[in-house]
Length: 165
Figure 1 (cartoon, rainbow, N blue to C red):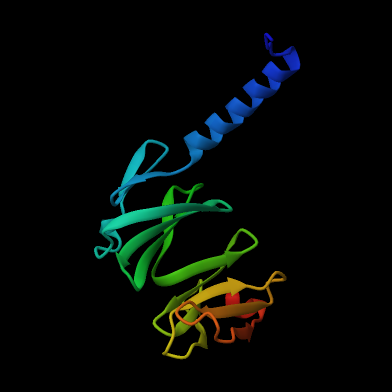
Figure 2: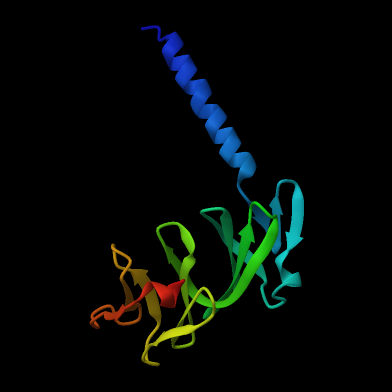
């Protein structure tokens, strides 16, 4: 049986290919500690010298969040503004997360303390765990889960918007 593409299928295919090409050209590329955006290269070691590689890049609103590896317990996070083409912030810690694609809601752990995007401590965790953070679906609570002991009851922290933003 011979298969042919209809004109509608071709139009859809071209549209999807164009969207993918556009998104790909605007996304970040990285190798080792070098990050490339819009044909300009940035070495994140110039910001946090302890970073030995970039391991991920996430799109958060108008920002790209680069995850850099420092050691098994800490990473370096680089918040790159795609409008100004500058780094807005760098963070040393672990488990950086955010809610609703809004970078100002970012929270992270440094040792056993939880900090907001501004670097203000908003909660403390017991020192005897390897913690993972999550936001509740409504964004009103932080949920901390001990990755080393998944049977341990999660910790819940109520938050106020002024604490996060």
